[in-house]
Length: 303
Ligand SMILES: Nc1ncnc2c1ncn2[C@@H]1O[C@H](COP(=O)(O)OP(=O)(O)O)[C@@H](O)[C@H]1O
Ligand SMILES: [Mg+2]
Image (cartoon, rainbow, N blue to C red; front, side):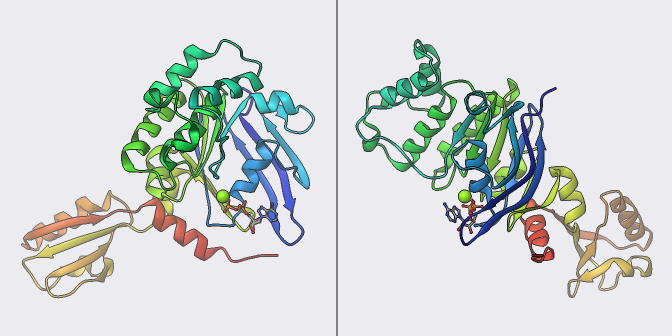
């Protein structure tokens, strides 16, 4: 199967900044993929290159097998990008904006799909409103609709939920999830790591123009962050067998390292055998935010 997005040795040099320093990446069709990284890591630059808005200084980029420079039209048609910046033409209504965008792709009678987009993005009652009159969140929805007018197989969203309220976010994700289930590939950048964790099966982390982590989300969570077991016991000493796992706590509160969920059973059995009762117990879960910070701190710049 054709790879949805394929990057090989992609570099981007601005006059003062080496924004991308050799990025190799394959995103398969049907993936829901997160591109994460701190501000300035190069995410938007990478997306601009995918969209053909910026040229890479070196390397090659293909969307659905089409080279973004040599086969610009085909590549552009295969891609829908929701840009990070709110850009809109103040002189058009929402529906006019979407018709214009359709015309750009040579789609004349696209109103059935436009209506579906408006419905699904909660814009139906704003169809005849000038975009300049919309709130920031509503403008963001129009940008999403614009990116989707031509039903692109590959959808890229650059911080789509920045400054967007919870209700809007949830309806946006419900719709994007549906498109993903229907086979569209989705690439998402976001500062809300819990969003990436909930939505994306695979993650690339970018730092200073390089991919510093690339794996399935569940692997990153398993490998990258510690799991801890918090215990409140009716004893002030742990059985000797559990002492090696102790990493903190005071009084009758104990914090144990839990390398694997499978170790839980043994810990409970040890307590039972020692006749120690459990008053309260909880697990401190790994989350993508912790993993992200750990990876960002561990990777130092190599120039
Ligand atoms: N048009 C540009 N001209 C010069 N430098 C740029 C331009 N666009 C981005 N940069 C620089 O490239 C780096 C990566 O920026 P960007 O891709 O926007 O990062 P991110 O989206 O991950 O926050 C930053 O140092 C930024 O200042
Ligand atoms: Mg950006």
